[in-house]
Image (tube, rainbow, N blue to C red):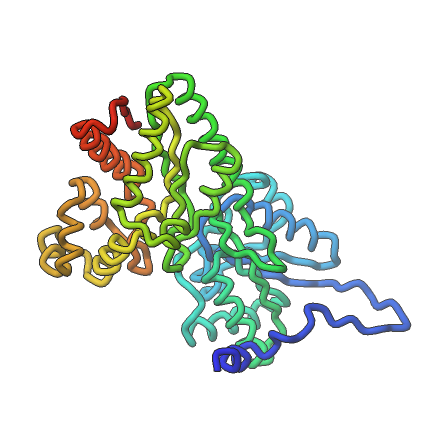
Length: 373
């Protein structure tokens, strides 16, 4: 039933990627192409280079034009575009961010949005529309392509997977735009910090790595954290996917970290580097329930939130340090989801591990020193 439902919307899903036909003569080179580009996703390395490459390619064709829609999807609906030339793109080549065109948080998912996009494509004479963004943007691109096909609009829709989390991988996409740069840049910082720690030999560095905590999945991806760990070999990596697969509680995670520190202390090593993936808390069952309950409420004060939480979530919320309780109630994302990036997960883990080691010292199972940073 699910396959039939998908086929109803994506009628060309079983069609070949390329249809090659024999011809006895060579046709003229295509010309006068007008291609529009929209930044829909979050900031990522490589977006400006995409514009530069597309502009360079179409410049070689007679009358080829690249239109950059200013302000993301809102600019697309309002038909606000500039003609991109190599001269305009040159200052932004090899630079990060999306400031050349900008972006918005809106998606192309309502009937009105689809109609506005269709009108823009027709009025501006686009033969192609490039949507640059993450998983949600690629979903929008797929539905938009089907819609334009049904409406008999000759505009090809191309989705460019873009995002540092690297969650869009399949047989045709080796990695999303920006993942390699993000992983290498993160690894560089982690490596420098680890070297500093091994030189001082008295601190434990808890490092939270930004990752795919806002891609819409139940458990955020930890691809950047994993890649950084493979490159730098830290003492421990708290991987969201592993915690979720093992159904580890917050206490389980804390004890596992404390076990590693205690084991190193027996060898006289009171220093190390521990990587914490950004979405770790969302992978812990009891924390996931707490986050889900908070997201279902309108943003409010701590007292009002406490009244609406279930018994178990309220107990967890009350057991957290003051800084974490405040951060759980900060401003949310545009989709009303909690911003995991603003939670000091690494600080929480350091505090809880420190408490665990103090308890072990009292009963005589740990005698080392612990100085978290």
